[in-house]
Image (tube, rainbow, N blue to C red):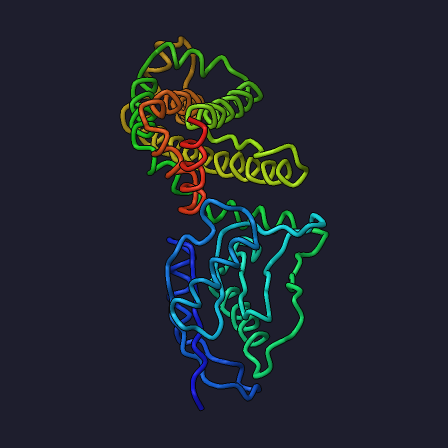
Length: 335
């Protein structure tokens, strides 16, 4: 039996890494199908278009160029049906072309979930008889929870934990602000005078300020391409994922700054010296409160430092590779 030649076309970065681990994929053991010969190509086949039909046409072109019997595209593009439902996959059985949306898998254990999904798509299209129907088959997400599952996948694809290392100027500014503020007697007085709820408000406001500044300075707010309901919904989804990604990233930054400032305070400060300056009894427990207040101030200092980064650097830190390229393209078109 001749093997079935299968093409996996993946968006660069994470999708390409997932596809590269599927070269050994074979048909289910309980199915009498020819062996699979899988070839992986890293190609931004969804770049410049949010249209599903356009992406499927590009996949068919790739299949023709490489001589594949069928082709599956792996993308970080969120897919949406005409009736407003979000999709896991779209297949064109007659042309043996399919596309899988990785964020729709939920973001966790992505390779483990993508592998059986690709096998199912290939098995459905790999039979000996070519379907005569012209209709495309769409695999919708559940109406209850489907949007949240997709949003979670988009946020995790953006890797919010890499936001801080990607903004080196902001990190340096935050650490410098925290180091100076920790040994400032005026900061000691402010920290000692604030109640716990004021410290909570300072935390929330500092994080919100940084998120807002990054959105404005990096031009991260997505605007609809037109006045259609589909375009507005797509922009809402992108903007929600942006805000959640940045909030998680900045919160991680805040917690890291708190730990660093606390370690610095425990190393350089003597509670007796602080007590003499404040004319009050001060213990090591007060250093935890001081580190909390300083973390808020240092986070704001980090926002000022992020202004030294280029817009491209901010988008690279905040987004997945596909979304970064999409945002850069939109920025070039608007300028």
